[in-house]
Image (cartoon, rainbow, N blue to C red; front, top):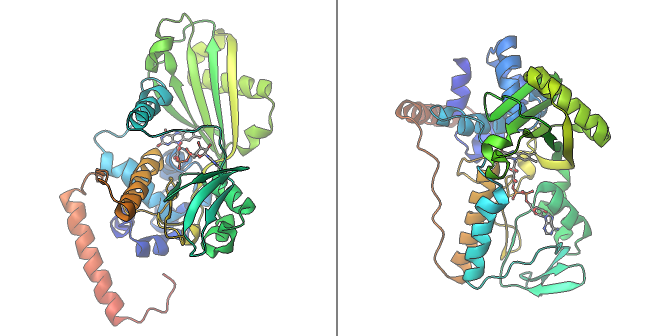
Length: 369
Ligand SMILES: Cc1cc2nc3c(=O)[nH]c(=O)nc-3n(C[C@H](O)[C@H](O)[C@H](O)COP(=O)(O)OP(=O)(O)OC[C@H]3O[C@@H](n4cnc5c(N)ncnc54)[C@H](O)[C@@H]3O)c2cc1C
């Protein structure tokens, strides 16, 4: 219950981020009297799969935002779910078809290396190694690791503190594996979140025979197992990894002991996902960059929409596209807001904001936020 106050107080505003960002999730839970068992069995697993890191490495602000969006605001339908089919086929292919049918051209295998600006400091093109693409506006939709790499080799972006300060942000190592077994194992649920195997690593596994039509008729189980904050696993070779995953799956579902792995795929992604570390908010960027027609999108971009992860990457992409439309003309995309707060949460937030405002007006602000 005491933690509920923080959830009311954290309204996703810049002030709320500043109030909570410099403490860790673990400190926040401790401060609000969360028991050791509740932290270990509930909050820490949620952090390991929601923010991809253990509580002592997560910003309390990001924790409150993620917990509110994924769990509290969706109590009726909170679950770990997977796309029915591959994301490439089900989501990206229809987008690609639509963009192409509207005359757009999608170029793959082109790595952006710099932005070209004119004398007024406005972007006029994008550089991909030796190729130049002219542009009226540019949206960079890359991860933190991606933008740090672009800035490090750019002659333009590394002139701006907003961009060179991005070196203070980081990513988290993740590991994705797919295993093909020689026989079907009975798996009660298609999507599963797991913890307690490695101290600071969370993982999820999915029964793909159940989720992807292409595997439905196979005589053996196909499992996707993804590990977050997988630093120590990335130093293992593929054989060690496969054995470990098989062992961990067997701990969850003993039937895996009798199934043999006949094929496998291991993908190691160093610094693959955004690390919302304590103190990171001051370096995150909004969609508008210091270059007037250069915009940013991604799951690390500041927005007051309230969504997280993939949905936030999508929403910030639409927000950036709408900024371009505002500048150059066109019909803006409709962005669906997150579900409104429940009435008692709305009331609590209004009361809290008013009390905070009165207190700020009468008490000088010399304490740390
Ligand atoms: C194993 C795993 C499981 C996950 N599970 C979930 C989940 O269940 N739900 C959820 O919501 N989120 C999940 N996430 C997080 C989710 O994938 C991210 O939040 C999301 O992909 C962020 O999107 P983005 O567009 O910001 O960045 P990215 O998805 O990283 O996309 C950036 C793109 O930019 C490209 N790029 C980088 N540099 C350059 C360059 N110089 N030039 C051109 N292109 C460049 C990259 O190749 C990449 O394709 C998961 C992540 C991982 C790794």
